[in-house]
Image (cartoon, rainbow, N blue to C red; front, top):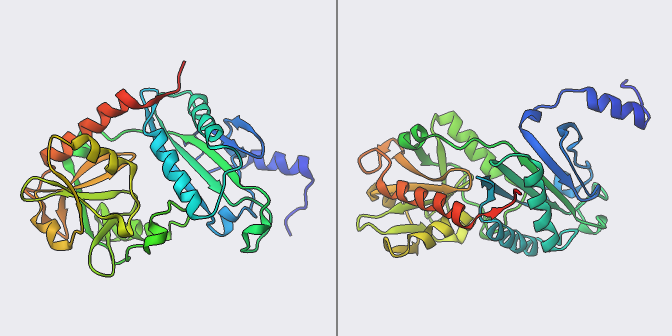
Length: 315
């Protein structure tokens, strides 16, 4: 039988055990405590938070580079929409939440990193009824991030059609904490020895990748983004569309698998990597089998936009 410990002895034991991933944590905040801490051994979530045992919560991931948080407002606006979709309110105002995110980035002590913001139903019981939880939970963590090098972008990604179907529309449009389909897609990619899986809906239309959006450049040179019927509207792909206006035609429409084979370029767009080209889909080369000029141009536009419009937090 394991020992039964009092608070002091339990905390001593807790602080003595190894914690996987501790080397990547820079700073974190929990609303119940109301403070920022640097010790990852204390980055804990109550077991009865419905976020933990029901997946009843939402999250956002944000990147910061050069001392600037990219698309902070866009991420928080999407988080507010997700919260509304789950009938969930954060335990503080959205303005206060925004300031906490900035404070955690500053406390990380680095110019470059990632931020994970989670709002859960909160602790209160192991049932399923949200009424168990008197107040929502809020967790913000900053962790290490190393941008990919140019060789990675020059190599490009290999992609395939996932056996995991696209999420139901009403769930896909909420960035919720239940990411099992995304986990299965990532596992599938490892099993197949490829980089990224693309999900399709029941009518055969392209939805999204596991943690990113997909777009293509068609034969006429237009940037085509699949409709968000069964996909999350990504902050990166939406901003890329805005930045590309005036340089190329940009359109939303339904996309089938055949469109990927006919495309000049296939693109994966997400927070951590901005925009990267897909060089092969289902073993067949995309275009000439190398990342194309549009993927490079969109990445350059997004990187310049971070410097121009990112939210500064140092000094």
